[in-house]
Length: 313
Image (cartoon, rainbow, N blue to C red; front, side, top):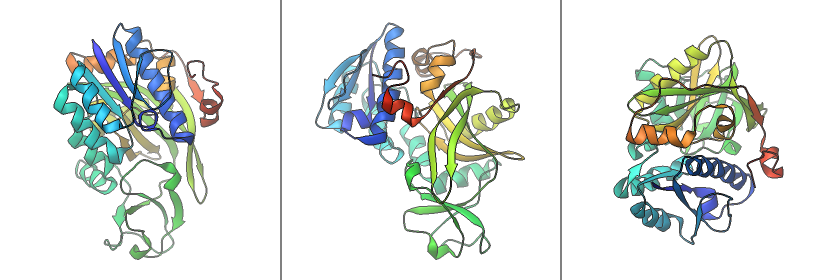
Protein backbone atom coordinates (compact mmCIF):
# COMPACT_ATOMS: atom_id res chain seq x y z
CA UNK A 1 0.00 0.00 0.00
CA UNK A 2 1.24 3.54 -0.79
CA UNK A 3 0.77 5.89 2.16
CA UNK A 4 1.37 9.63 2.47
CA UNK A 5 2.51 10.98 5.83
CA UNK A 6 2.60 14.78 5.74
CA UNK A 7 4.09 16.49 8.81
CA UNK A 8 3.81 20.28 8.73
CA UNK A 9 7.10 21.37 10.33
CA UNK A 10 9.17 19.17 8.01
CA UNK A 11 7.04 19.84 4.94
CA UNK A 12 6.67 23.59 5.41
CA UNK A 13 10.24 24.32 6.51
CA UNK A 14 9.65 25.32 10.13
CA UNK A 15 12.57 25.57 12.53
CA UNK A 16 13.41 25.36 16.23
CA UNK A 17 11.56 23.13 18.68
CA UNK A 18 8.60 22.73 16.32
CA UNK A 19 10.86 21.10 13.73
CA UNK A 20 12.51 18.84 16.33
CA UNK A 21 9.16 17.50 17.53
CA UNK A 22 7.71 17.27 14.03
CA UNK A 23 10.72 15.40 12.64
CA UNK A 24 10.64 12.97 15.55
CA UNK A 25 6.94 12.20 15.08
CA UNK A 26 7.32 11.87 11.32
CA UNK A 27 10.24 9.48 11.73
CA UNK A 28 8.23 7.26 14.08
CA UNK A 29 5.26 7.13 11.71
CA UNK A 30 7.31 6.54 8.57
CA UNK A 31 9.33 3.75 10.21
CA UNK A 32 6.19 2.10 11.59
CA UNK A 33 4.37 1.98 8.25
CA UNK A 34 7.54 0.97 6.39
CA UNK A 35 8.25 -1.86 8.84
CA UNK A 36 4.77 -3.20 8.09
CA UNK A 37 5.66 -3.46 4.39
CA UNK A 38 4.11 -0.27 3.04
CA UNK A 39 5.63 2.41 0.81
CA UNK A 40 5.61 5.78 2.54
CA UNK A 41 5.97 9.16 0.87
CA UNK A 42 6.46 12.36 2.88
CA UNK A 43 6.78 16.03 1.83
CA UNK A 44 9.95 17.81 2.96
CA UNK A 45 11.79 21.08 2.36
CA UNK A 46 15.11 19.51 3.33
CA UNK A 47 14.91 16.91 6.09
CA UNK A 48 15.67 13.39 4.82
CA UNK A 49 14.81 10.36 6.96
CA UNK A 50 16.41 6.94 6.87
CA UNK A 51 13.08 5.33 5.93
CA UNK A 52 10.42 6.27 3.41
CA UNK A 53 10.58 8.32 0.20
CA UNK A 54 11.17 12.05 0.49
CA UNK A 55 9.22 14.34 -1.85
CA UNK A 56 10.77 17.80 -2.09
CA UNK A 57 8.25 20.62 -1.88
CA UNK A 58 8.05 24.40 -1.83
CA UNK A 59 4.29 24.41 -1.23
CA UNK A 60 3.12 22.08 1.53
CA UNK A 61 -0.61 22.38 0.85
CA UNK A 62 -0.26 21.73 -2.87
CA UNK A 63 2.01 18.73 -2.27
CA UNK A 64 -0.44 17.24 0.26
CA UNK A 65 -3.17 17.47 -2.37
CA UNK A 66 -1.01 15.96 -5.11
CA UNK A 67 0.46 13.13 -3.04
CA UNK A 68 -2.84 12.13 -1.46
CA UNK A 69 -4.36 11.69 -4.92
CA UNK A 70 -1.60 9.16 -5.75
CA UNK A 71 -1.73 7.17 -2.49
CA UNK A 72 -4.05 4.56 -1.02
CA UNK A 73 -4.23 6.43 2.30
CA UNK A 74 -2.90 9.57 3.92
CA UNK A 75 -2.30 11.21 7.27
CA UNK A 76 -1.50 14.85 8.06
CA UNK A 77 0.14 16.06 11.26
CA UNK A 78 -0.11 19.84 11.60
CA UNK A 79 -1.02 22.63 14.04
CA UNK A 80 -4.66 22.31 14.98
CA UNK A 81 -5.65 25.63 13.40
CA UNK A 82 -4.33 24.39 10.00
CA UNK A 83 -5.15 20.72 10.31
CA UNK A 84 -8.83 20.93 9.37
CA UNK A 85 -8.24 22.36 5.89
CA UNK A 86 -5.27 20.07 5.22
CA UNK A 87 -7.24 17.01 6.32
CA UNK A 88 -10.07 18.00 4.00
CA UNK A 89 -7.62 17.81 1.09
CA UNK A 90 -6.79 14.23 2.07
CA UNK A 91 -10.46 13.30 2.46
CA UNK A 92 -11.19 14.51 -1.08
CA UNK A 93 -8.48 12.32 -2.59
CA UNK A 94 -7.95 9.15 -0.54
CA UNK A 95 -8.64 7.36 2.74
CA UNK A 96 -7.90 9.65 5.68
CA UNK A 97 -6.11 7.83 8.51
CA UNK A 98 -6.60 10.75 10.88
CA UNK A 99 -9.55 12.48 12.49
CA UNK A 100 -12.29 13.75 10.15
CA UNK A 101 -11.85 17.40 9.20
CA UNK A 102 -15.06 18.42 10.97
CA UNK A 103 -13.92 16.80 14.20
CA UNK A 104 -10.50 18.46 13.86
CA UNK A 105 -12.11 21.88 13.60
CA UNK A 106 -14.23 21.31 16.70
CA UNK A 107 -11.22 20.12 18.72
CA UNK A 108 -9.19 23.12 17.53
CA UNK A 109 -11.74 25.54 19.00
CA UNK A 110 -11.12 25.41 22.76
CA UNK A 111 -14.43 27.10 23.57
CA UNK A 112 -16.62 24.95 21.31
CA UNK A 113 -14.83 21.77 22.36
CA UNK A 114 -15.39 22.60 26.03
CA UNK A 115 -19.08 23.32 25.48
CA UNK A 116 -19.65 19.96 23.75
CA UNK A 117 -17.84 17.98 26.44
CA UNK A 118 -19.69 19.87 29.17
CA UNK A 119 -23.03 18.81 27.65
CA UNK A 120 -21.77 15.21 27.65
CA UNK A 121 -21.20 15.37 31.40
CA UNK A 122 -17.41 15.25 31.05
CA UNK A 123 -15.45 17.25 33.61
CA UNK A 124 -13.94 20.32 31.92
CA UNK A 125 -12.71 23.57 33.47
CA UNK A 126 -14.89 26.69 33.23
CA UNK A 127 -13.94 28.52 30.04
CA UNK A 128 -14.79 32.01 28.74
CA UNK A 129 -13.66 34.46 26.07
CA UNK A 130 -13.26 38.23 26.19
CA UNK A 131 -16.54 39.87 27.13
CA UNK A 132 -18.08 36.52 28.11
CA UNK A 133 -20.22 35.99 31.17
CA UNK A 134 -18.03 35.97 34.27
CA UNK A 135 -17.81 32.58 35.95
CA UNK A 136 -14.70 33.42 37.99
CA UNK A 137 -14.13 35.42 41.16
CA UNK A 138 -11.52 38.13 41.39
CA UNK A 139 -8.16 36.57 42.13
CA UNK A 140 -9.02 33.07 40.88
CA UNK A 141 -6.14 31.36 39.12
CA UNK A 142 -6.89 31.03 35.41
CA UNK A 143 -4.98 29.79 32.39
CA UNK A 144 -4.86 32.06 29.36
CA UNK A 145 -4.28 30.20 26.09
CA UNK A 146 -5.07 30.62 22.39
CA UNK A 147 -8.65 29.71 21.51
CA UNK A 148 -7.33 28.04 18.35
CA UNK A 149 -3.98 26.27 18.20
CA UNK A 150 -1.73 24.04 20.24
CA UNK A 151 1.37 26.09 21.18
CA UNK A 152 2.12 25.69 24.89
CA UNK A 153 4.52 28.63 24.59
CA UNK A 154 1.51 30.97 24.43
CA UNK A 155 -0.08 29.56 27.59
CA UNK A 156 0.17 31.55 30.82
CA UNK A 157 -1.11 31.28 34.39
CA UNK A 158 -2.48 34.44 35.98
CA UNK A 159 -4.98 35.85 38.48
CA UNK A 160 -8.40 36.73 37.19
CA UNK A 161 -9.51 40.37 37.25
CA UNK A 162 -12.33 40.67 34.70
CA UNK A 163 -13.48 39.24 31.38
CA UNK A 164 -11.99 42.17 29.49
CA UNK A 165 -8.50 41.06 30.55
CA UNK A 166 -8.71 38.18 28.07
CA UNK A 167 -6.93 39.05 24.80
CA UNK A 168 -8.82 38.64 21.54
CA UNK A 169 -8.32 35.14 20.18
CA UNK A 170 -7.68 33.69 23.66
CA UNK A 171 -9.72 31.84 26.26
CA UNK A 172 -9.47 31.88 30.04
CA UNK A 173 -9.95 28.51 31.76
CA UNK A 174 -10.06 27.74 35.45
CA UNK A 175 -6.76 26.32 36.72
CA UNK A 176 -7.21 22.76 37.98
CA UNK A 177 -4.85 21.32 40.58
CA UNK A 178 -3.70 17.76 39.97
CA UNK A 179 -1.42 15.44 38.10
CA UNK A 180 -0.74 16.32 34.47
CA UNK A 181 -1.41 13.28 32.29
CA UNK A 182 -2.51 12.36 28.81
CA UNK A 183 -4.27 9.34 27.36
CA UNK A 184 -3.36 8.00 23.92
CA UNK A 185 -6.01 6.17 21.88
CA UNK A 186 -6.60 4.83 18.39
CA UNK A 187 -10.24 5.12 17.36
CA UNK A 188 -12.02 3.35 14.53
CA UNK A 189 -15.40 1.66 14.79
CA UNK A 190 -14.17 0.81 18.30
CA UNK A 191 -11.78 2.66 20.60
CA UNK A 192 -8.43 1.13 21.54
CA UNK A 193 -6.60 2.48 24.61
CA UNK A 194 -2.82 2.62 24.16
CA UNK A 195 -1.03 4.35 27.05
CA UNK A 196 -1.41 6.77 29.92
CA UNK A 197 1.42 9.28 29.93
CA UNK A 198 2.92 11.62 32.54
CA UNK A 199 3.57 15.11 31.16
CA UNK A 200 6.59 17.16 32.19
CA UNK A 201 4.86 20.48 32.75
CA UNK A 202 6.56 23.50 34.33
CA UNK A 203 4.05 25.87 35.90
CA UNK A 204 5.09 29.44 36.60
CA UNK A 205 3.82 32.60 34.96
CA UNK A 206 4.20 30.54 31.78
CA UNK A 207 3.12 26.92 31.40
CA UNK A 208 5.68 24.90 29.45
CA UNK A 209 5.65 21.29 28.20
CA UNK A 210 8.93 19.37 28.06
CA UNK A 211 8.27 15.76 27.09
CA UNK A 212 7.19 13.14 29.58
CA UNK A 213 6.99 9.47 30.47
CA UNK A 214 4.91 7.17 28.28
CA UNK A 215 3.23 3.98 29.48
CA UNK A 216 2.76 4.73 33.18
CA UNK A 217 0.35 3.06 35.56
CA UNK A 218 -1.03 5.82 37.77
CA UNK A 219 -3.38 3.46 39.60
CA UNK A 220 -6.42 4.95 37.86
CA UNK A 221 -5.72 4.09 34.22
CA UNK A 222 -9.12 2.48 33.66
CA UNK A 223 -10.89 5.63 34.84
CA UNK A 224 -8.69 7.83 32.64
CA UNK A 225 -9.23 5.71 29.54
CA UNK A 226 -12.98 5.66 30.16
CA UNK A 227 -13.09 9.47 30.18
CA UNK A 228 -10.74 9.75 27.19
CA UNK A 229 -12.80 7.35 25.08
CA UNK A 230 -16.03 9.15 25.98
CA UNK A 231 -14.33 12.42 25.00
CA UNK A 232 -13.07 11.15 21.63
CA UNK A 233 -16.42 9.63 20.72
CA UNK A 234 -18.34 12.76 21.75
CA UNK A 235 -16.18 14.83 19.39
CA UNK A 236 -16.33 12.36 16.50
CA UNK A 237 -12.59 11.63 16.55
CA UNK A 238 -10.93 8.78 14.65
CA UNK A 239 -7.36 7.66 14.17
CA UNK A 240 -4.83 8.59 16.81
CA UNK A 241 -6.18 10.88 19.54
CA UNK A 242 -4.37 12.36 22.53
CA UNK A 243 -6.50 13.61 25.43
CA UNK A 244 -4.79 15.88 27.98
CA UNK A 245 -6.10 15.29 31.48
CA UNK A 246 -5.45 16.77 34.91
CA UNK A 247 -6.11 14.07 37.47
CA UNK A 248 -7.45 15.44 40.73
CA UNK A 249 -10.43 14.10 42.63
CA UNK A 250 -11.74 13.24 39.15
CA UNK A 251 -10.17 13.30 35.67
CA UNK A 252 -10.57 16.76 34.10
CA UNK A 253 -10.22 17.02 30.32
CA UNK A 254 -8.01 20.00 29.49
CA UNK A 255 -7.36 19.60 25.77
CA UNK A 256 -8.01 17.19 22.90
CA UNK A 257 -5.40 16.59 20.19
CA UNK A 258 -7.01 15.09 17.04
CA UNK A 259 -3.64 13.99 15.59
CA UNK A 260 -0.46 12.17 16.57
CA UNK A 261 1.30 13.82 19.50
CA UNK A 262 4.87 13.61 20.77
CA UNK A 263 3.78 10.69 22.98
CA UNK A 264 4.08 8.41 19.94
CA UNK A 265 7.87 8.75 20.31
CA UNK A 266 7.60 6.58 23.41
CA UNK A 267 4.53 4.56 22.45
CA UNK A 268 6.31 2.85 19.56
CA UNK A 269 9.04 1.87 22.04
CA UNK A 270 6.81 0.26 24.67
CA UNK A 271 3.91 -1.17 22.65
CA UNK A 272 3.90 -4.71 21.24
CA UNK A 273 1.96 -3.62 18.15
CA UNK A 274 2.95 -1.24 15.35
CA UNK A 275 1.23 2.15 15.37
CA UNK A 276 1.05 2.17 11.57
CA UNK A 277 -0.85 -1.09 11.43
CA UNK A 278 -3.23 0.10 14.15
CA UNK A 279 -3.98 3.28 12.18
CA UNK A 280 -4.66 1.19 9.08
CA UNK A 281 -6.89 -1.08 11.16
CA UNK A 282 -8.87 1.96 12.31
CA UNK A 283 -9.19 3.25 8.75
CA UNK A 284 -9.81 0.04 6.80
CA UNK A 285 -10.67 -2.83 9.09
CA UNK A 286 -10.89 -3.68 12.74
CA UNK A 287 -8.81 -2.93 15.81
CA UNK A 288 -7.64 -5.51 18.35
CA UNK A 289 -9.30 -5.54 21.75
CA UNK A 290 -6.06 -4.50 23.44
CA UNK A 291 -2.32 -4.00 23.02
CA UNK A 292 0.51 -4.96 25.35
CA UNK A 293 2.65 -2.32 27.04
CA UNK A 294 6.09 -3.56 28.07
CA UNK A 295 7.30 -0.71 30.30
CA UNK A 296 7.86 3.04 30.44
CA UNK A 297 9.83 5.39 28.19
CA UNK A 298 10.84 8.96 29.06
CA UNK A 299 12.05 11.78 26.82
CA UNK A 300 12.49 15.56 26.86
CA UNK A 301 12.68 18.20 24.14
CA UNK A 302 16.42 18.33 24.81
CA UNK A 303 16.63 14.64 23.86
CA UNK A 304 15.05 15.46 20.51
CA UNK A 305 17.47 18.30 19.88
CA UNK A 306 20.56 16.26 20.77
CA UNK A 307 19.45 13.10 18.98
CA UNK A 308 19.41 11.12 22.23
CA UNK A 309 16.50 8.94 21.13
CA UNK A 310 17.95 6.20 19.01
CA UNK A 311 15.57 6.48 16.04
CA UNK A 312 15.99 10.25 15.65
CA UNK A 313 18.44 11.32 12.96
